[in-house]
Length: 283
Ligand SMILES: [Zn+2]
Image (tube, rainbow, N blue to C red; front, side):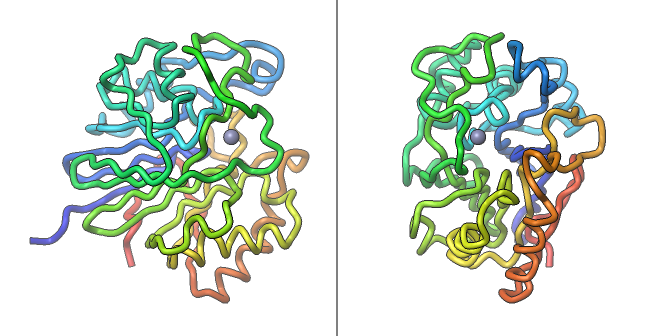
């Protein structure tokens, strides 16, 4: 019997929906994307209409788990709303659990994971490897009590940061959302495809970019890299994605480093289109 088909859909930032016929896993699911002024000066809250709209646009997938790569608002703001609408488990660090508690996700559907933990959802097996946030973390620390929105964006503190390996009989996808690494942490683990976070990579020294590639892409032997967390997330998802402005990042510079390394290593690089359904393991 052939293995069930797996599809991936990118929703901007590091939000990715992976599913087979029976089970869907949502990484982050950040779709509210409040504007820059509100994020900088006001208070933010998830917009349940945006979440519901996204869920319908995705065909109301059977989401078993919403998994937060870390707890910043551009990862975890909407996750409790997805969990409430779908009855999925909310999975992540204790900080992520506190974000769930703030919006009333019941304790039996909060799953706190640590470094090396493995959890199964349908035919998917998810492994969490602790990593570190990209340099110059704007909101370091932990969310140490239930976070009730609306709140200042800085209330969504980092918590633990995870590399997320999603293994299915069809293959393994690694979602590595934050552009940094712990030396050697991913060695000995393999992935077919890396969803590689490149937020602020364009502002890093060349050596950093090269080591990042080695520690995440070469270390796991991936043959395909899908670039994530490059889009301007102060703009709504109803418009085409556009890169972060030059002041914040430099996508051209990132690409000018990554593409030659990918060519050298025989790795295919893709810039995903929001909402588009793809087969992460297609040849
Ligand atoms: Zn972050």
